[in-house]
Length: 242
Image (cartoon, rainbow, N blue to C red; front, side, top):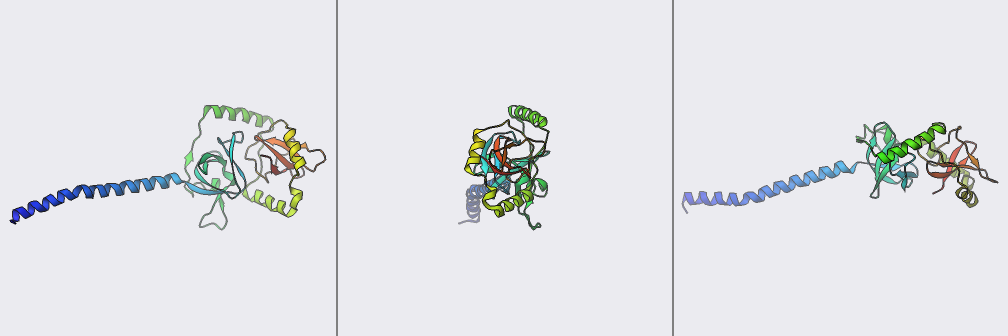
């Protein structure tokens, strides 16, 4: 074979191989892009400090579409900038949860930290919510809350976990019996909307009226779309009726 023939053969082989090289490079780039996109979409994994409502929108008046179990994990896709609500996904269902009760583990922290207080460090995105129908409902519910005193439930992960521990030590006395639960279900009262979220251990403000349960140690109210049983002395929610 002449030198010219050898050069032509080598050149032809390189040309034939180029599509394979190009295809390999393209496949790798696509894989990297897909991996990066999946990582970006994954969000931060958070744990519910207590049983927590998953709502259709960011507000205590919004429909409850599911319940995140205590210690249940969700993916946090983002949080509102000026409110304590985060858009999360639970087992494929996306909704909104109150960020005060979502916690994550951080390497530099000895205890789990609250998502809403550490969104910058956790690099959680800021999201928006704009739905005219739901916003109208929120406005109406907000007016109702203002009429009731514009109050808010008081609690946080530490408070509700402490309350849970006290309830465990108190035993059955902290759990309303079936008769109490039946009475609350069969005797609805005027609903009240308060800021925050309905969780066991949260306390109801003094300006909100409680209704006593006859021949029982509990009171109750219909709060943020949910009937709840309250210990009247400390005004602490002890049971949520679902």
